[in-house]
Amino acid sequence: MFDPVKDLANQIKHGVPLALAGAFEMDGALIRDDLRFAYGEGRVIATGMIGNRVFVMVYTMRGETMRVISLRKANRREVPKYVNETQGSYPD
Image (cartoon, rainbow, N blue to C red; front, side, top):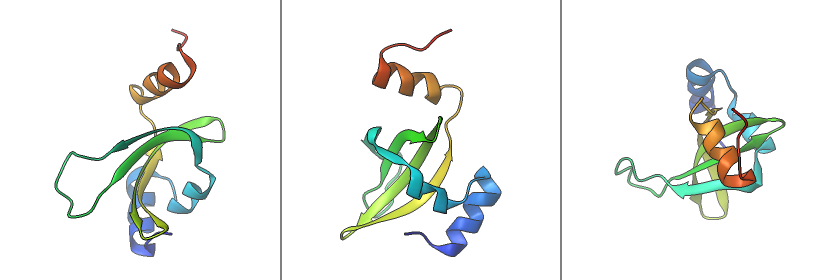
């Protein structure tokens, strides 16, 4: 579930619609709490796969519902980190 205004903002900022989060593979994703700021709600950062590409998704849980806050392609630092932590090595 996501806010349509937030979806448009995410598309403008990251070039990715939040609806794509439905294909995010939570199995095998790296999950950590988002402690960068005091948001007033618990946020989670998940790094995982959509198809054959690594993505970073920020979300919060509202009851049983996952509310996607942002979704973007992983950057040059995040891709090898994800591969190293999930598969053991990243080819140079």
